[in-house]
Image (cartoon, rainbow, N blue to C red; front, side, top):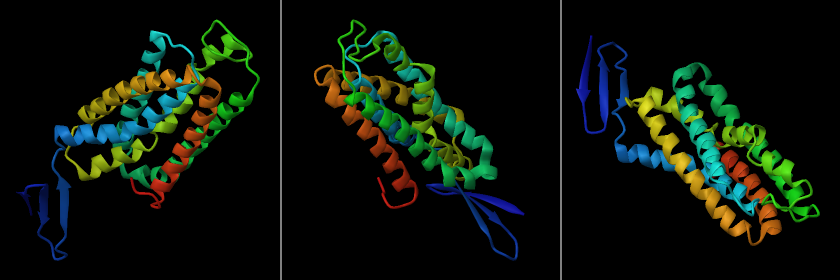
Length: 229
């Protein structure tokens, strides 16, 4: 026989067995808690967007929408995937997600550093590089955006698993908040990066690549428990 007891922070399900086991399930998160979680998850995407902006001398309106949609969509999608995968893949997610994110950010970061040291040529495409039109398209192309979107959102898989087992929250509402806030911050980050990169593009690209690698290192250190932010 089970009885449900409501406390300030938990719904406590009591099981009347000889083992005397108690199961705890947190109440639904408040709006403020969801917003705080969304901002926390969006920080990596915000930082990466700044790095992307550092590469550019000018940006189109469509660039802001692309960054917002890519990062926002994946940041909102990952918690839902984690939520529905549940405990079956919990150990795998927690074991490998940070290494995948690190590897993806390392590749993109090293590529940015390499580009920063390349000989530049003026271009009317808003990018100072050897093959401006191609690189202008690649900067916001499918391949690069997919890699960065996955790298900055994959740790949210574990968040979805946690919500499934420790909270009575509506995962669709939570994910929507996460997606919208991430999208907005990503667009802001792109603008901030462009504002600085338009003046100091060559140095900015190198710095941006280093920052991407450091973000990957930070993700690994957080997940293995060495860094607590």
